[in-house]
Length: 240
Image 1 (cartoon, rainbow, N blue to C red):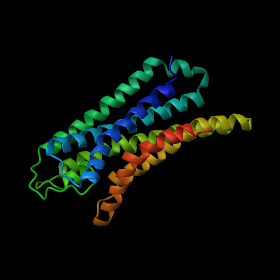
Image 2 (cartoon, rainbow, N blue to C red):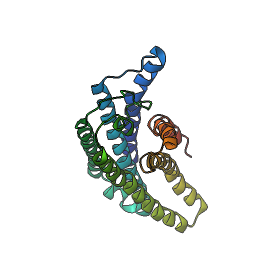
Image 3 (spheres, helix red, strand yellow):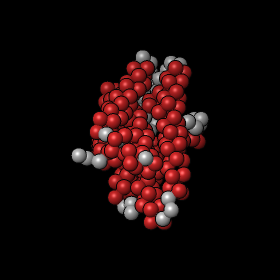
């Protein structure tokens, strides 16, 4: 049977590969052909997949932090609490919730009229950049985006902090230095991934928009949708 941590890691790997498959081919095509045009339907689909994967990754990272919490704080009950059924339910809820919220965002986006300029100021069809092309009031879209950000980014991030507070307290109670080192090494890689992903996501979607902030958010979006997935395997494989 696959250990729960590796089961959840496999889902994180699928998300990372899907991130790259969703945005990189078009970006490379733009660089090679200098033709940066994208039709409406592929753009909307790119937005949908991008949001769905982002939401799903947030929830998968929370499930992984819960797994580490059980492993460190309740090691004797680990196999019972983190059973195959529980892991499957956590993964299913993460994927279903992530893409359900993405569908809501896209449906609200499709109700808007777009009357130009037909130029997305981003490396790909990111929802905030697409919204700027609408020639109608987008307050409802922005309220839903902010609400989803609180529920799917800030909320899970707080849960991760609570989990790691308990984990740190449990590690400090371990008497041997070797035991502390092993316990910390099992969590350090996940903590690095969580910090990179949630930090960038909160700066993009929770910091007030401005003309100066726009260029920075483009770089941050590119980082957590392209470079962060590339760093994840490196972070997990190089941990001691």
